[in-house]
Amino acid sequence: MSATAAGPVAPGVVCAFAVTRTPPDPAGLAAARGHEEGGPLRVLSAGGGLCLVVQDVPAALFDEEALTERLNRPADLERCARAHHRGVEAAAGRGPVVPLPMATLYRGDLTAARAVAARQPVLDVLLDRLRDRTEWAVKVHAAEAPPEPATDTGAGAGTGSGAGGRAYLGRISARRRDRQGAHARALAEAEAVDAELRRYAVAATRHRPQSERLTGRRAPQLLNVAYLVEDARRTAFAEALARLTADGRRPAVRVDASGPWIPYSFARWDDDPQAGPDQTDQEVSA
Image (cartoon, rainbow, N blue to C red; front, side, top):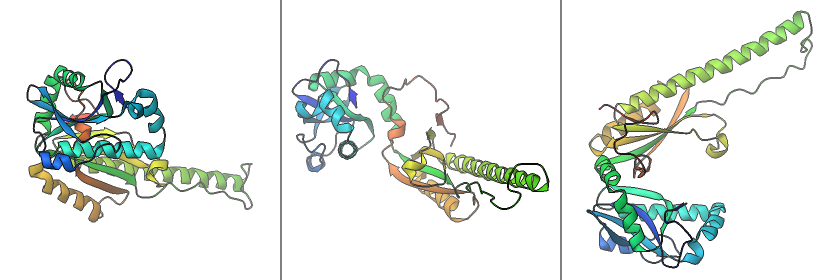
């Protein structure tokens, strides 16, 4: 949730989805749905060639207290996220967009337009950067879950003195080395996958790997990377993905990919346009 305007949210709340220079087709915008509780999507001019795709929403459901309560309920959170994505997709019908954080709210059109105008230098840089480019999401998992530590219950399983104890400790040490070796091989292969895909991207950013609870897998997620790809190189990137997932060159990992997407990961509108890329968002040589 991003409450951009200071103070309590008043009646006449405007929910903003994305900034663009190329307003979407009116018919397409009319057919799109944002939040079910709000009015139709519309375009709001912000000056300087920029515009916002927005929706009027009821303050009773979108003030800070009500929205916080709703977003703490998983089903409502999912509905809000889907509504936000629909608004962003509608804005992207004719050109690049800078998606705003989910539930970005303003107290009326004037406040929204002023907020955009204040960030125009950043937004201009981002829109130029994102033109004719899309995002691809790639997640790399270890091929197998680390084996569960075995429990010896037979004779000599204790850690006391004698040949039985030494043998038991040797087996435990060997299992530990096997687990560490398998993990190291998987990490090395994951890094090799990333290095290969960066050859076809203009930028890449690493997200925090997702937990096993979120992925539903016992095997750990090693890399969670977004790539910004020129439309002209989309086929080459997709072919590289196909090679990585089909030729068996990386047996220690499994690679899952999806795209092309609107480049959310590369459209942070609070970025400093003069700042260079950092370690989590690196420009990649073509």
